Image (cartoon, rainbow, N blue to C red; front, side, top):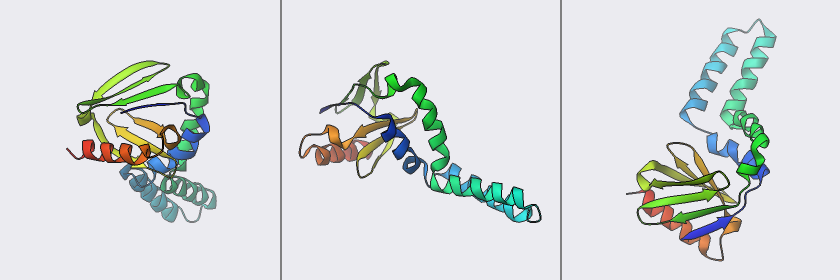
Length: 150
């Protein structure tokens, strides 16, 4: 199965918080900031700062700032991309080059309303659902699910 698509930078920024929400890092760090906020009670500025950081971590929006930094390399993030799925590996070809990785390097995949995130040891691949022909979204989801359950 091969999917060709172009991404939009705002799709990355909009979807990145959902990818990072509920991770061990964000939950533990948010709990630490909440504890510091409670312990710093007389100092209202520190309490407000720690509460803000805790909420940003729990919501996943802390990483949106990092996604905004990607605007400096917009040409590399927007594509065009071609993702090829085979029984033994997946291959991504884009403006920065191509990469092939075995399915053992894929940890899992997350599906949102308008995209898939394929999480690997080195990062995440963004695949918009608009890239698929009719019926292709279900085929892609089933294939990814089968390959990541090996």
